[in-house]
Length: 233
Image (tube, rainbow, N blue to C red; front, side, top):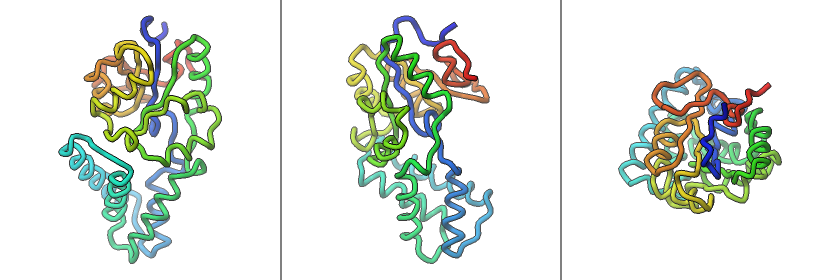
């Protein structure tokens, strides 16, 4: 049976971790940049440092009511890179290299189930869109993936909205672009707090993408094809 409720008129997707994935992984890229800068870090150490730095910035944004901007996103990622790669001779240069790397489509790959799922949804007359905690770089990334073009007209980027998920203000912009009531908008993402709980609190039909299963959410799909009642090949 299709996962989408019959009253749903629009489906918005999270970007990173749902539709697009870093390729190679962010940890591999960070370790490579550090190595070329003269610092050899084991993958486990890169992961430990990155997680700690990321949590610090998440806590700062939470304390600020999830407010953001292009400047805040750049500052945020600068802090994460500098903490993760502490010990490199020129952390500013490492940050610039990583910031530019993730601004292009060559750094990313698309979920193989994305294109057929989006096509089926649009064929059924549903509005489709994208809602991401990112900055203007996301638009450059999307330029490299024509299969995601149907989402481009209704792309919500946190730095442009001024608030990050899980803020209600972010999801209010999603609903505005969807052009229907919040309860008629399904939001699909892989993050429990930002995508699932945030969308639920804003009154949307939240659906968690959890390939390995997740019992923290009542509405779960293992892959995008489940949204339309068809498993991907």
